[in-house]
Amino acid sequence: QKTITIATSNDAPFSFTDQASGELKGIDGDMINAIAEAKGWKVKVFTSEFATLIAALNAKKADVIVDAMYITDDRKKQINFTDPWYTEGEAMVVPSDSTLTSRDDVKGKVLGAQTGTVFKDLVDSLGGSQVKLFDSQAALLAAVENKQVDAVFTDSAVIGYSLVQKPNPKLKLVSPDKPCYP
Image (cartoon, rainbow, N blue to C red):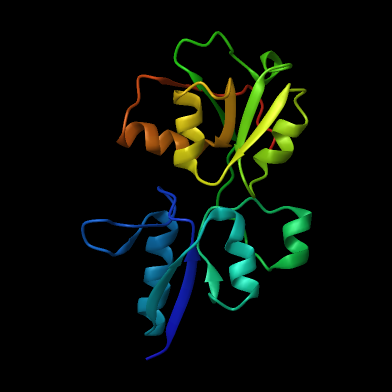
C-alpha cells in the first residue's frame, strides 16, 4: 500500500488533525482522504508552519500540500497547483473596542500578518506605522487580544471558523468591502 505524505499548517476549516481522534479533518482533509481511499493509499500527515509548507514540499518532506493557499505568480514559480475550487478574501481583525472599520482606517497604525502569507504584502501596502509578523494564526490573534497591534489581516474563512468554534469577546472581525485577494 502506497503512503502519501501531506503537508498542512493545521488550519481549520481546511486541513487539520482532530485532537480527539488524531484523524485528518476539514474540507481539504476530507478531499485528500477520499482521493486516498479511491486510490488505495494511506495518508501520513506532516504538520508545518504555513511559511515553511513550500520549502517542506520542495525538500521532499511531503508529497503534496493540503492547505488553503492563495495562488500567486511567485508561488507558481516554486510549486504546481491544482485548479482552484474556491476563492475568498481577507479579513481584518481588531480589538473589540476598536473604532477601525476598514482598510482605509489603518494608515499610521501597527498592523500584523502571519509570516509567509499574502497578507504580509497587503499590510506592507497599507501605510501602517509598523508591521509585525507572527508564526501562527494563534499568535496573530493573541497579538490583537493583547493590543500589540491595532489590526491584523488574515484568511477570512479560517478566522471566521475559528471565532465560531471559540468565540473571543476581545476580538472583532471586520470584513473589508472589496477583498484584495479574491
